[in-house]
Amino acid sequence: MPQTYLQQDVPGGVPVKMWTRGVPVEDAARQQLANAARLPIVFKHIAAMPDVHFGIGAAVGSVIPTFKAIIPAAVGVDIGCGMIACKTTLRAGDLPDNLAFLRAAIERAVPHGRVAGKRDPGAWQKTPAAVDSAWKQLEPEFRQICRDHPKLARTNSHNHLGTLGGGNHFVEVCLDEEGGVWFMLHSGSRGVGNAIGTMFIALAKQDAMRHDVHLPDGDLAYFEEGSRHFGDYVRAVGWAQKFAKANREVMMQRVIEAAKAVIPKNFQVHTEAVNCHHNYVQKETHFGQDVYVTRKGAVSARAGELGIVPGSMGARSFIVRGKGNPDSFNSCSHGAGRTMSRGDARRHFTLADHRAATEGVECRKDKAVIDETPAAYKDIAAVMAAQQDLVEVVHTLKQVVCVKG
Image (cartoon, rainbow, N blue to C red):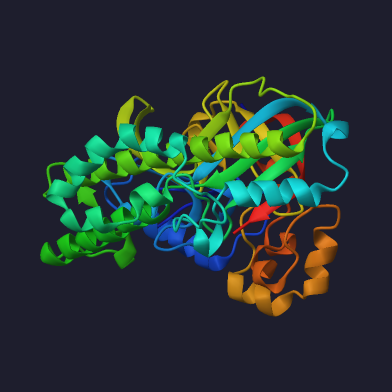
């Protein structure tokens, strides 16, 4: 396989291999990659995906393999955040002429934004059975985690299950290259994942101070195997990833139910849903070594494995099949990646800019979502071109409805 990455050598650290040809990379993100590369626990090299950009501690769009240790801030606080997509038997012509009705039905069915988790009676009259069923599977292990960390019991875990949240989380109705209708959504572990991430990041920093560990960035504090909090973190982060996967499954079920209520034609979901994390850690074997692989804004792309690379509110998304590139630790990008902060986007773009960029999409076109406007993100076509040796495109999706929190 020809080498298509760019290599950044880091004095005192491992190299950084970057799949960033043709896409911009800010200096701050390069510095974060170099900081992580200098940690003694990092194995072989760090892989940077084409959507790489500045994050907290570790760059978003980085793949960090670590030996007998995990960096909680590299996993982040939106633990298990990811995507789910499923194809239906519907065709473009089966959708209602006025897509506002479909958007409204989805918004009623899936709590989103600030009301998410409050069980707004205008949205759900009662906790859906799917939520209770999923929570029944998750609750026993969560209770065990809370016995050691009681403050986690006070999180809004049960109520947040089956809710979207805000920011860059979304639900979309899309058309593929042949006019087939897909449902797709993006969310994670919500408040309970945030609480788990925040708590263990703080504990890792305390451990680093206690043991006088000198770090290039305090947010890169880590737990080593055998340390006081390592086992607790592995169990808690693993549980949060299960919560995130279940959360997406519950919401997808509600989206399908909502669509069936407003689309006259009967339809089925005729392919198994693709459900993949892009903020997570798990143990894997690479180059003959068992390591913990943290994908902070990256998707697993083992040979033959299906994944999802979303664009922005007005851009295309892709169902991809992994090529199993060992240098990327079998990974690909998790999206387009931001080119500017949310604050910069609000200052730079006007409402007219946003409306023009989302023309043809039934979505919010108000000032509160300008920070999510397509021009605040990298060109998804350039991102896909930069990772041709990581994945192949199976389907190209274009949204016609987008629900944002």
